[in-house]
Amino acid sequence: MEADKDIINRLKRVEGQNREMIRMIEEEKDCRSVIHQMNAAKTAIDRAIGYTVANHLENSI
Image 1 (tube, one colour):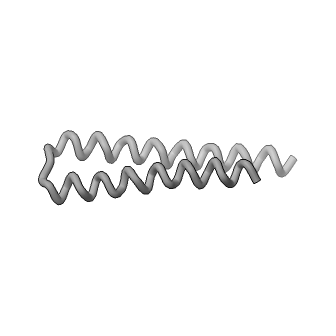
Image 2 (cartoon, helix red, strand yellow; image 1 turned 135 degrees about the horizontal axis):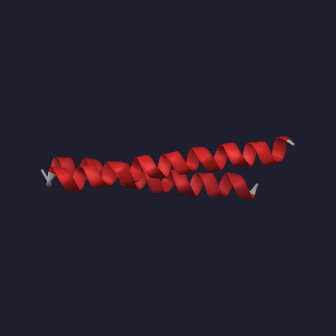
Image 3 (cartoon, one colour; image 1 turned 90 degrees about the vertical axis):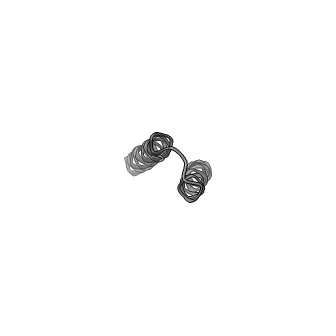
């Protein structure tokens, strides 16, 4: 299903952001940069949730 592929792609993007946050922390990067990346990951997860709920509602009606 196309929606499944889209949500998987969104979550893979979040997975990459998580790896980047870990790398940044291990390399002792600036706290503001890490927080910026964390906010980006949080937003991506929130959007993935919204997309999943909307898709579910569309297919349930």
